Structure formats: C-alpha cells, structure tokens
Image (cartoon, rainbow, N blue to C red; front, side, top):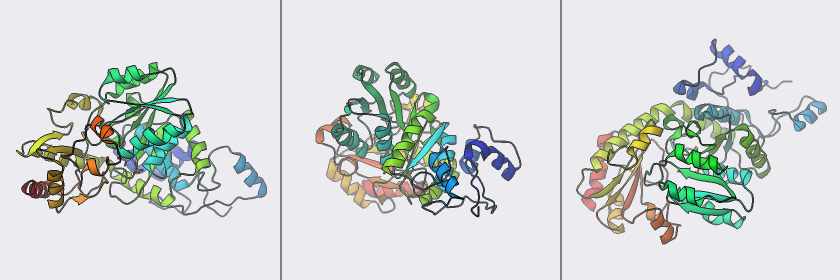
Length: 415
Ligand SMILES: *Cc1c(COP(=O)(O)O)cnc(C)c1O
C-alpha cells in the first residue's frame, strides 16, 4: 500500500509517541504538555507538525480490504464523514484534556449540542435546562427539540431546588453552562451531578467559557462535555467547530449519528483547532488576568450599576467558582446606570474593541446581548435569563490592559 499507514490509535498510539519522543507516555496531569502533544501519530514522512489530511476518501489495498474496512472494526479510514486522521488527532487531544474516554468533533458548537440530543434523547424524553444559556442553545431546546417531542423545562440555574423539583420520571438530561453567558453565574457542578445521578439522567455541561484549562466537568461528576471550539479552543477567531466528550458508550451513539446525519468537522478546521490547543493554557491564564483587572476597574466606575464576573469577591458565585474552576475566565458583563440607548452609545464610542458577537478571541469583543445574542428570545425569556437593556458583555482579549481600559473610558465619556 502506497499510503502512509495511520496507526490504530487504540493499539499503536503510545508506541508511536514513544518512538517520536523517545520516552514513556506522559502522565495525565501534564495539561500544557498534553495540549501540545496528545494524539499526534507521525506518518512515515516524519513530519514534526501535525499534517492536514485534506482528502474526502481513502483507498483500499484490495477488494477484500475494502470489504473488511466497511465491516469495521474501528477505526479504519474509509471516508472523511466517518473518520479523518487530522480530525481524530484533534478528538484524541481534547479527550485527553477533558479527561474523557472519547471525544467526537462536530461542524460547530451548535451541532455538538444538537448531535448530543439526537444521539441520546428520543421523543417523550424530558430535559431540564438552565435558563442562562447561549441564545441559540435556548432556541434549540425551546423550539426545535420540542417539535420532535422532547419536553423541556427551563430553570433558574443557581436555584438547586428548582433543578431537583423539575425532575420527572422521563427526565433524561440536565443541560447547563457554567459560568453562564452573559451573567457569569456559577452553577454547582458537584451537586447537579448528584441530582442527575439520582434522576438517572445525563449531566451535560457546555464548557465553552472555561475550557478544560480552567474547569474539567467530567472530574466533577458530569457525564458529557460539549464545546464550541469556535471560541477559546481556536482562540483567534478563524474557524467554526465543536466537540463532544464523555464515556465511550455515549460517544458510540454520537459517532453513529454524525456519520449518518453528517455534521462532522473538516480536516482543515481540526488542524486549526489543534494549533489553538497548543497555546490554550497560556492564553486562558492571560485572558483571566486581563479580565480580572478590567472587572476590578469597572467595578469602581461611577457610571456602572453592576459588574458580573466571578473573580470579584462580591460575586455570589465567587467561592463556588474557586472550588470547581482554576481560573475565572475571560468573559464579563456589566450594567450601566442607564437604558438601552446608553449601552448603545457606550459601545459605539469604543474604537479598539471589536463589535462582534463572537468571544474567546485574542481580540477584545463587545456586544449588547439584549439586542443581539439574546435578541431572538421573547421579552419573557430574556427577563427570566436576567438580561437587562443596559447590559454590555465584554470578552476580554489579550491586548494591553491599559489600552482596553482606555477604550472603555471612551465608552463612559459617551454615555
Ligand atoms: C458560541 C457558543 C455556542 C455555539 O457554538 P457555534 O460554534 O457558534 O455553533 C454554544 N455555547 C456557547 C456557550 C457558545 O459561546
């Protein structure tokens, strides 16, 4: 066979890594190292960086080989909607970082959430959802999933009694983000894991805001982690993608769904995300540092009504965040003393901050949640999520903090 042989990651991975690096496999605790090394199986070309396998399909050695590969066993490459070595490299690296048995990559964060639902829920099942979720996730659960006969109850995320009381005999899934978007509410993952276990339901955590560099939900009792890789995993705003991580029994269902329905990740995007992971720890530490400084400064400004950032000691979730996160993340929001027009004037007066709904980028972004990311919600849903008209969300980037503060000062001057 003329193609470089891609080693079976289950049997050959550690051997291949040993050969490449000349030493024994790395212990799981070495996060920064795993983020740079995990899942890379060099081909016989000996390339140092991870290659991009830009191919839709793979050739077989013979008719018998083709028949065998179609039959399984996993994983042998047939077609890139099924498996692709670059995508698998990304999946293995993320699985390692989240402490998961397996991970599967998807075309976007939303398709990670959709695929999780389509793979593990059926008509008649019930889901309990935090009411403080990414706006599109609320639409997915509140509109689309309900059309397919999945019952959904939204609860106030930090009210554990509400979660407990919402459990029904048909409850199959609890879904949340912590810290939440955009109010940075911190949800007690250990307690929710206990509630979901008692209900024999799956606890699914959207870990976009922390990434495994700051929080590992699976270690705290969650069953499944979902990501929009579009955010901090890329970190530089280049690609859209997602990933789901958890136990092999659940990921098996996801693999079947993804192969059949098709929302898989492209090899190029997987490669960009691999490069992103290599600097994840460094970037997250720097995002936390800048966000903390900005939150403390905003908290002292007379035109600010309230700052939402768990790194502030006055934040109601501060202690809880310390117990389940190793950093407070890069996203904060604040309410101005004023109305929607004050918020819009503030935003329009900034020059450095990018006015975009994206987050998790080295560039600081600023947005008015009530009329953008959460604009599709009804007034009632928005009130339930606590998103006021004077609220501004800032995803603090890695520019010099003095320049970010100076830009905010332009905003305050325009209010
Ligand atoms: C962006 C985002 C998503 C959706 O991800 P896409 O990659 O845009 O599909 C889901 N959850 C959170 C918390 C997000 O920020």
